[in-house]
Length: 186
Length: 153
Image (cartoon, rainbow over all chains, first blue to last red; front, side, top):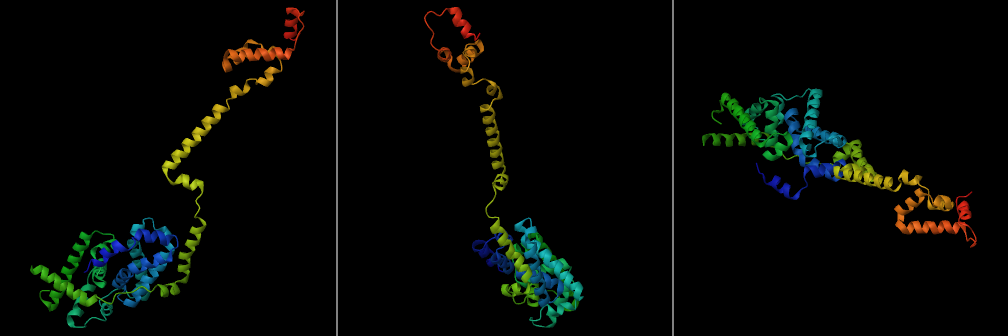
C-alpha cells in the first residue's frame, strides 16, 4: 500500500530509539507515541491469532502495559518493534488458550465483519485461515493497516525481500485454495 | 503480465476481506485500564531526576579516554609526590640542624653537601655562619686554642 506515511515519519517524527530512550527515563508522552505508532501492527498480529478484533485490541493494550514495565530490559532500542511484537504474540496466544479461541476456520468469520459478505469473501477468509500462523500474521500486517514492507520489516525483524517472498508464497497458496474451490484463476 | 494481474486481483480480494477500520490507540483509556503499569513508567522519571548529577566516578568510567586520562593524572601525581618527598633527602640534616654545631658545619661531608647545593658561595656562607657561632675572639688567641674550641673540646 502507500509508503508515504513511513517516508513522512522518517522526516518529521522521532526515531524508535529516541522514543524508547525517553520512555525508559519515564517520558510518558514518548511512550504514548510509540503506542500510537505500533498499535495497528500489534492489533493485526493479535487479530491473526485470536480472530477477533476486540480481543486483539485488548491483547495489544496489554502488550503495551507489559512493555511499559519491562522497557528497561530492552537492550537494543532500535529493536523495540520486534520486541513488542513478541510480547503481543505471547499475550494473544495466552488469551487464545484461555478463551479456547485459537484461530480456526470458523473464527475467521469475525475477521471481516465490515466487509461485503459475499461468497468470494467467505472463501478468501477460509484461504487465509489455511495459511501457517506466520504467513497469516504477515498477510494481516500487510493488509490490515496497509503497512509498508519497511514497517513490517521493523516489526518482524526480517528483510523486505523475505517479506516479499513470503507474501508471494502466501498469496499463491491462497490462489490455489480459491482455484480448488471453484473460483478459477485468481 | 498475467501473473501480475492475478496478484493484483488477489491483493484486492484480501484487502476486501480483512481490511478493517484502522485501530486507534486511546492513551487516556489505556492509562485508566493499566494504572499500575503507567505509574511504573512515571516512577522512572522521578528516579532519573534524582540521578541527574552524575558522580565523578560515573564520568570517569563512562569512556576509555577519561579512564586513561585519570590513570595518567594519578601516575603524574604520584611521581611528583615521590620526587618532592625523597626519603634520602629527608634524612639529610637541615641547615638549622647544621648551624647548631660549628663542628658539624665544617666537616667534609657538610661542606661537600653545601657545595652541591650552592657551589663555592654556599661553602663561604657556611663557613661564615660557623665563625659567627663561634663568636668574636681576641687577637691573642692562638690557633691551637681556636682549633680546640672549634673542635668542641
